[in-house]
Length: 394
Length: 188
Image (cartoon, rainbow over all chains, first blue to last red; front, top):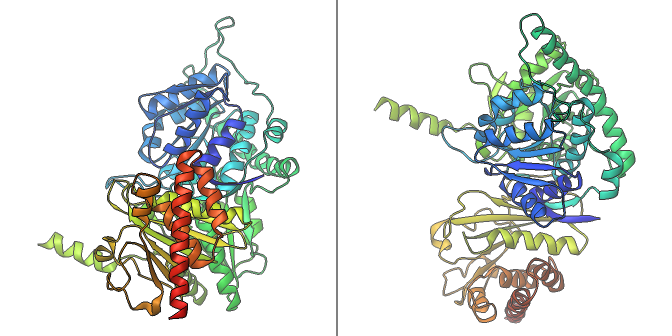
């Protein structure tokens, strides 16, 4: 049954149907509605015997999730922005210990200057922490990916972040088919921890590893991520069979087969991008869109397959690496043979600046005409820059 | 696709209004997307929310730039911000005010601006000057976007019990007031 529901609420209801045993979170905009809804669900007794743990910080939230998961509980948390950064040390511990925690990141910019709005700087800053990262295009995907995430995390014994654009998705009310409880139970078996902290059968996890084996630990972390590539694709197929609707697994190609130019992007901007591409297709511009659901692991082979022999790639980035350029672009360049292709980076929508069809159309028209530079900041306000420069001189 | 922009102030239920409109459209079997423009969440600060309604799933995520309808929940915003910016050529506007369009100095716009005393209606029916439900009733009369029954259903679902009944009464009265204005203008 479809519901007209806020994205945060849809995620909370879906997480509830995944039967978490421990939910712990520290509130931060724009994640707050998710954990408020979950705390109310836990309090109502509907999720019994689930425990909601109030914590004093994001560092504690992740630490509680780590303890709970190590003790054999299905653990969930959610955060955003500076909250994710405050967790950074514990994030590495969760993945290093192989704990299948699922976390929603309600993507938000990182300060200073303080900014509560959406971009991907938070999750992308944690790209190397060993967590799988999946990005939702809309609230249907945000809900469905959580079910897939628990299954994936527990099968591979590795943590998964589900990234959904803060405000743009978390606070948007739209039609969502909530995953049915029966189907979730069929798709997501009971959590069978690979290792367990049990006072009756004591073990040590996370013991010190010296130079003799640390490289091997990291090698195995990479192997787990690579194994996730095949697993995500399979689980997406299985999701469709169980729930009767598709979920984007690794990538979602749109009108790519005959495209000269393919635009690569993640998250909610894909919708506006597809509308723009449809409009420009009417004018005869052969554009395609490739959405990346998986950012970690980086789905290089799936990308190569989807873009075929498109001459030009535009990477629409919702985050930025100062001093380098596009984050996804760099991954793409490392993963793909780019010889004979032109790759453009377009940085858009930082700190919540709306990404409009009109601006996308301008950039993509320039790309198709071969006049787009290697790195473009969409809608850069030159007047504001001149003003700032003048102030600095004064 | 029909696009609505709602202007008001923090605490007036601007975001809720957009959400309720989307729920009403959903009940009529269409697709709808409601989302706030997240600026300040302080009471009294200007707030904008959007609602799109379409026959097909809505992918677009940009703010509503060319609204087919604008709802102004707080009349003082007319002087403060350009609330009518981008109004579509045949777009309509509903302002929360007990004064006439002429008295507000909005007589232009080919008669596409209407007023309804939503805060007074809310005060009378609900006991608090929360104008959003009444304005949705007025908008239903103005745009034929959603029937009053769907607005009533959305309000009742969100506010069960007496609060819902009172808001429904305010919405229904606003509906009839706007409906009467429309009739009057078509005869003029």
